Amino acid sequence: MTTDQQSLWSRIQGLVIFGWIVALIRLLLEVVAPEQSMYFGVYWMMPLAYLYYGMTRKWDDLPWSRVALSIVAVAFLVWFLPNAVSYNIAAFSGWEHGRFSPDAYPAFIARDSGITTILNGLMVSVVTGVGGSAWSIVWSTLLIWLPGHFRRRKLQTA
Image 1 (cartoon, rainbow, N blue to C red):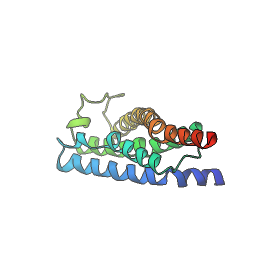
Image 2: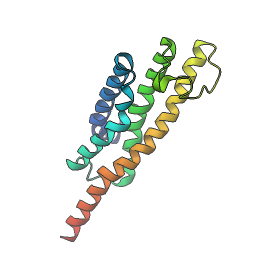
Image 3: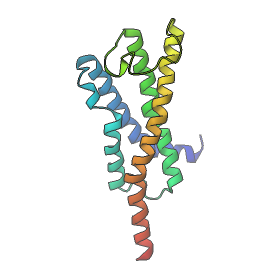
């Protein structure tokens, strides 16, 4: 592992752990209060984490391209992986409420075997991973990179 990769992990570790905690709470809510689970999740909570990173100036030294790369890594770990687990648990447990309703997400291939069920869960996870990446890049640009960019410009002109 290169120093740059270690640096990337050390920068995103807090966001990933926070996102996993949120995803775990969401999955638990799916079990105990499925009708309330839609009001809590990474789409709602991660912008708060990005706001915290922006306010604490944790990534002020990064150019936008590094922020975006870091956030795509976060989105893979926080959207794709937890959703791969959640959608497969739901499919094999027979959950058909909320986001797991057969009408809520498409069956990319017929779910007639365990393998195709897993593949469907993975495909939904890919879609949510891409959506989570776009969502996160927008929010991290607004809440992390822009404030840091303006602070750097202010220091340069002073």
